[in-house]
Image (cartoon, rainbow, N blue to C red; front, side, top):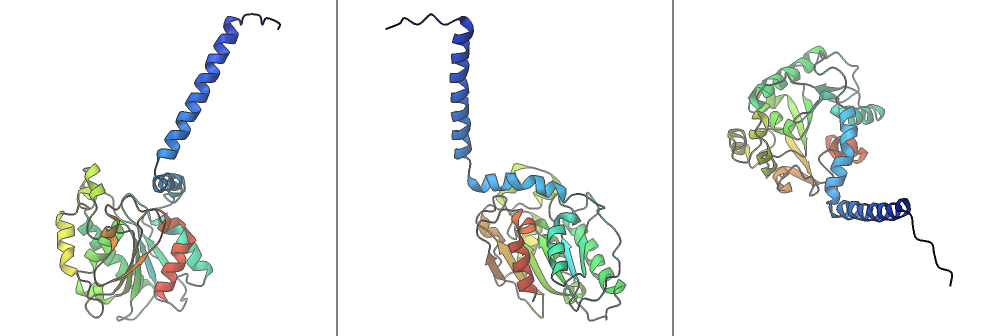
Length: 264
């Protein structure tokens, strides 16, 4: 057997680097496999959510052609933007329901102050379209936007102007995830916050004629709602969306189809 010449220092270093690389690769693979799939889906959707933050946040509401339906006001959630609903609004427009509005809010307002702005937006949407005094709109709200909408409905006049409220991943009973930060809005999302306590007086949801019809879409895979059942509203129509993340409601066409069906 021919004796192999001894390896040079560079060759020995190359072997060691190869071993380190293989171990690092295996460690990265093990770490990837250890992450919950729901968390991976949330992370993968963040770049797409970033694209929906573009555009003006509070343009004036313009008159839109009558499409034969009630106007829809889309209400964004925490840290969101009116353009978060761009994919869903496009889907609706392609299917014949184009009189829709994305609603933005003045920064740094409390949830109650945002509710005041939402009431004004509802009145404005009806007025600019020349609708009768007894006309109504539909509200579609994501996450914290559902709480803003419910606060707006505390006003009897506003409640009479809304036919149907659909919430998407809204922490109706608060979320324990809000304990990971202390900003004013996040504190309002804690289960024991004054806002959550105040809104509990509306439950079980009475529906018409006291309040609009309420449909709540929720998912066990939504990691920002702890527990996920916080999105379930007693007395309302609760629809589970399997495998949906907190952002799937805004990006997945299945969400648009389910909202469309509920509004029909």
